[in-house]
Structures are given as structure tokens and as C-alpha cells.
Length: 239
Image 1 (cartoon, helix red, strand yellow):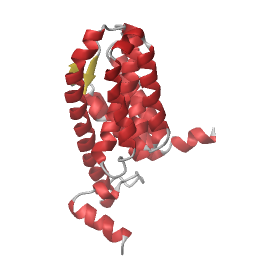
Image 2: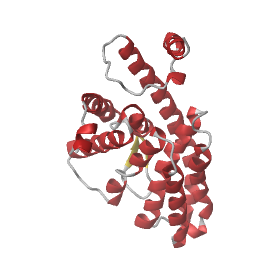
Image 3: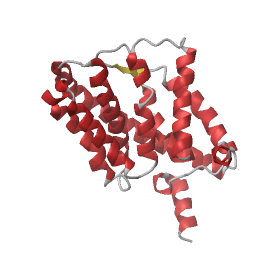
């Protein structure tokens, strides 16, 4: 019970409310449709991974799941196919990857690669799973480059989704091959979107805390602050 109360703090609950509103709007903006299903990628996919950075990994995961579930209910709670259920999972792993560096960041894409090539179709297009080495490579650069961190997060989501997709829908090899250029463009855009979203929210929360409008102790990353906020952060760190 104490562990639950630890996460049900005022700042976490307020963040969930704010994130729910913004996330719901983003969930209404489609970006691309998944092959083999009626399920679509939304602008939300470029926004959601940053959640755990500001309130912690577990609250971030819960916030993202809650947002997706509310959206699911609002739209009639209709399960069009297995893709509807699968879509709940990948983003949760993206949140974990972006929020915190850990061995977990390496294990998930490795498991996804093994699961993909274990499938008969996956073995014929094994090179598709090379996309999922990106989170592994990005792991070693994520603390230095925000884009690497974002690429790792979005390709972790892609790895989880792809590994599940091939076993549930068994798309033919030709589809996976045709998806390669789509994935390159799509994930590059998502990574840029994640980076931009993070910088904007990071600076917004820092500004609100500075003005004592929303001083709830969110985790602010000083090196991604801009202008006066950055200089003030440096001054406080190095008086």
C-alpha cells in the first residue's frame, strides 16, 4: 500500500490529467496505417514516450496506458482485430527506454529480434529485424545525444510491435520488405517528434516552476533547457 501511495502523489496525478488532455488530442491525429490491420499510428506515438522522464518510469507507463485505455473507451471500446490490443504494448516499452538507462533497454530489442527470426516468415526476411539493433546501439549514446535516445525509444516500440505482429498476423515476406523504406521515414519522423516534444515540455515545466505556477518537483533535465532557463540552471549548478 505504501508503494502505491508513493506514486499517487499530487504531482503525478496532476501530470496524468495534463498528459491525458494533450495525449487525447494527439491520439486523434493519424500519421500512418499499419499493414495487415485497421489500426493506425497517431501523432501520440511521437509524444507519449517522454512521459516517464518527468514523473518516473512506472508512473509514466501507467499514465500512457491510462491515456490509451481512456481513448479506447471513448471510441466505443471496439476491438477491430488483435492489432487493437497489441497497440497498447509497444508504447509502454518506449516510455521505459526513454525514461531511464538500464539493461532492460538492451534485453527487449534482443528478445524481439529472436522472436522475429524464430517465425518461419521472419527467417526469410531476417534483415528486417536489424532495425531493432538501433536501440542497442543508441543505448551507448543516449546520454550524449537526445536524438539517439529518441531513436532508441521509437525503435524499441517498433521492435515489440513487429515481433508480436509477425506471430499474430503472419504477414508475407513481401510486405515486410516493402515496409523497410516506410519504417526508415516513419521512425525518423517519430524520433524527431519525440526529441522536439521533450525539449518543449522540459522547458515549459521549467518555466512554470520558475514562475511558481506549477512547482511540483518534476524531473527537469538542465542540459536541454533553452535561453535564460539554461543560463539560470547553469548558475544554480555552478555558482
